[in-house]
Length: 396
Length: 141
Image (cartoon, rainbow over all chains, first blue to last red; front, side, top):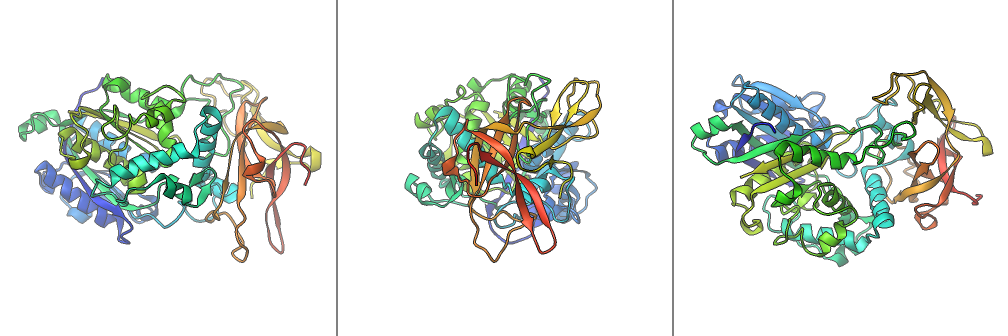
């Protein structure tokens, strides 16, 4: 078990399609996080930026871009790219600097201005890039992979499209309570069923949109937090950033094939499951200790998978947990009370930081209408491309 | 488009992977430099044809045209394209591919036997780019 770091401040720019530069969203989120922490930008010893490739490279490297926009003040700078896990790895980098004594207080910022429609790889002829290849040779978009997982769940666990729709109904009801969410109307199962099929069996309202957005947190050492009058701040106990174990036998974005299990028996757990386990081990906690979870519901069916991978229920029991109301507000273990990606859409490098912002508000008890009563422990989990995934555990 | 991923015609069409001479791990798309088994001391990687038939691990389709670099004809309306992830028993791996033209999700089920067949990815006046398709066995089209 490692030492703890404090979350002194959290800030967000609302998600949506605002049509502005990602720097603007990141700076707005950063200023809010600094104000929330009661700090000035000049007090910050280090900044970590979660990169956006479309807006952020080449031409912008997020850490320095945000530092310049806030006004050069000589802070140590780091930039992190890990696809959807960029935000969590930015938090991990900040935490490592604090625990190593390299910085007392660090600002972490992620922001994105997403293109309309499907995510796509960077341009050019790049047949050495697996992400380029899956689009060029197969036309396999992200929703194609989500569709494969959803259909597999239907075959293995008898999940139904109605069950998937129920996830959207739940998350939209909670997103309706969140002023930072992009979609703030409650969605009915009938509306999900009436939306167009994107990748069978998933429909438009089963799949998260692409969005603009920004999120930031201010992290510090516990000693610094105490000096600044925060005796009991929200604390981060774990940031898991493990890689898969060979052979990885679940087809994952952006791969065209899995590893072969011919020479080596597969590990006893999938990659997603190992992300959660590593976080629990680092925190010295288990799923039974959780008050809430924020997970990457890139599709409704994937949220059900996370229930099982986080150990909230047994394998194949995700639908039962959902139907019992356990993952709704007021249930035993509310999942995505923020509204999730279903209500936010995806602003890639901001998303994992936004999850931690939600955990922070919930653990402080200031989440308003969507407050989980008495929340003490929260987990946030995500998965990106190329064997990247992360989980963050925060406590109060 | 990509070289050495498949070869042969008709019933001789095969996906080509590589196999490590030290640990027998199989790789597709082909791995020509280093065996990726972390416990392997690293053997020579030699080309090996993959099993021609396998079972459907899962399937889906794409109801909207994928973005570039996938090549679509903007003049034509998009016909949904089905995808099949196929479990190869001997190799103990899953390989994704498009379903053969005319095969829709209504024709598919998890566990169904499929075989690999040659297909056309894209063609223009000068070039025809070939690819692989999965097709339920017993279907001829």
